[in-house]
Length: 275
Ligand code: C2E
Ligand code: CA
Ligand code: CA
Ligand code: CA
Image (cartoon, rainbow, N blue to C red; front, side):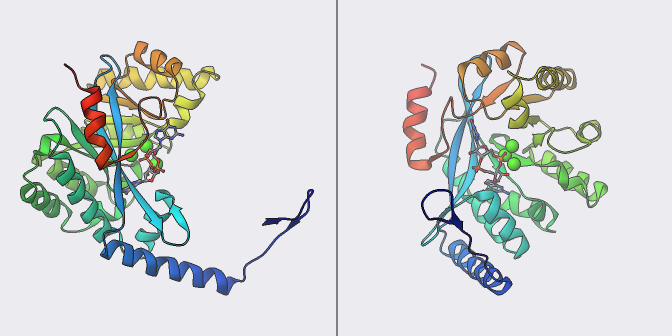
């Protein structure tokens, strides 16, 4: 919608055809971006909530379209899944993350988001093994973040894949915990190394006592299960102190650092390392 002074908006309603064309164009551009390795990873620091030391980084995909500018990852990841491109993209990103993290100090890990499509692919475990071998990256320093929708298609198959990854020594993290429905059941059957408490609970915990109660309960539950818990979306000191006092394991958010290109990670590590 284009603004024409005052409150009047002239709304352009694209035809179905125009939408279909632009979607097809975007998929074509996405395919090309994957082939030319124009989709890159940024890395966001994750901090130990008790010691305040740097613990590792989450890898987050970035795509700047030559004409449209930055496309949000939520959007192009979904598009890649719908267009059947996620397997290739996911493989390239995982290899890239391991290659980059190999140059970091040995106490730091990298955490990579894995889409449902990738996990369900027949050769996923084999590919993870191959990437670890080719980049000679220690499995213990790799975390794979999955969301609970991975359990929707087939519980048994999903558990099988997660068990195999676990056997490789890779850590499995349950992302966006609390955003969906019946996460507790999954915690009962699969030994996740870590759960990530969704940013929506964190955001509301200072103003809403129900959200605060849920945050406390999830941290306590994780503690009883022997699972680490990372709080997402930590933007101010007040959130950090509350979460730290509740016994949260790790924190992630703009307070500690924005996602950054790999070139900036080295100086971030140098500035934030224990001496
Ligand atoms: P996510 O996995 O939950 O990632 C966390 C998101 O929160 C990131 O958004 C990050 O930039 C943002 N964030 C971090 N700290 C703060 C904060 O303090 N405040 C706020 N408001 N936001 C914060 P981003 O990078 O836009 O990614 C969005 C989603 O796209 C991710 O959510 C993930 O689901 C998906 N995604 C990103 N990269 C990949 C990837 O390589 N593979 C897959 N499968 N999905 C990805
Ligand atoms: Ca994530
Ligand atoms: Ca998340
Ligand atoms: Ca998400």
